[in-house]
Image (cartoon, rainbow, N blue to C red; front, side, top):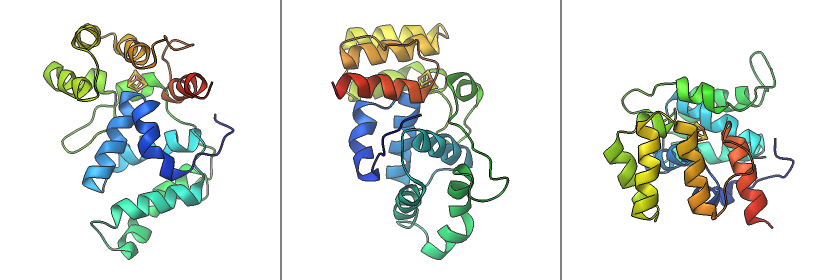
Length: 189
Ligand code: SF4
């Protein structure tokens, strides 16, 4: 995982430049709904830990968003635990690692949930609209949507990396945190 510390105030920008679609979707949902259900908190929280967000900063970010809708007291009682758990500070105190693509792809999100892999879970029209709104060219969008329709979710994700970075990822897409590191190593060059 990343050895570099990532400040939470960089996440809005990083979500646009270096997140794979699964994490960008969770980041956007958190920022617009001021909430993520448990599976989304775990998927995104572990990813953030992996990219070098420290626990206190992560807690501060989740608290800032959640308390736009609920009391700080309720956040501390009901939601802070998951974040501390992810960092191994409470509960079984294990060193939980960020989820890889196969696990994320196998997780199905229900109504009002945003975890899982969007290349599997979004219908073609929604995926097309989403990628177009991110500024991708129509030909690239079509290619990515076709790969997703053929159930080649990780190839669709790699194609998205390629068209947004003008170079394919260094590794086949197997893990969102590796996608992120490949992106940073190109952008930080
Ligand atoms: Fe995330 Fe992997 Fe799906 Fe890409 S292929 S969106 S990294 S789960």
